[in-house]
Length: 139
Image (tube, rainbow, N blue to C red; front, side, top):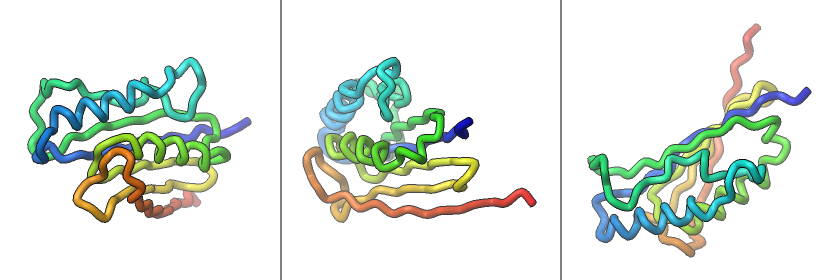
């Protein structure tokens, strides 16, 4: 029997930058291009809080797109999951992104994506990822 893996996190973008309606539209379209969950992809539209183009709830300084899903042993296919997530990020505007992977066997991993510029633009290859690992034993 495989163990459950929980993946969750958020993608942040600045609402203070020019053209934030257009930025939200680009980000929304990138997430709407993801497959539906019934196709069993690593990433699916349903796992994201896809923003509306018009800002219904005005954010203070940061647009936060959160996501989460439960998987059966996704850590065994983690390279593919990361590749799809980075493909999504490459088509979006963002300031930073964080993914938490919680597994029973290998602990919790936190991945953080940043760019050397003040924000990432779609198509830019300037993506840097950092990973931290922690594990708590219950003995």
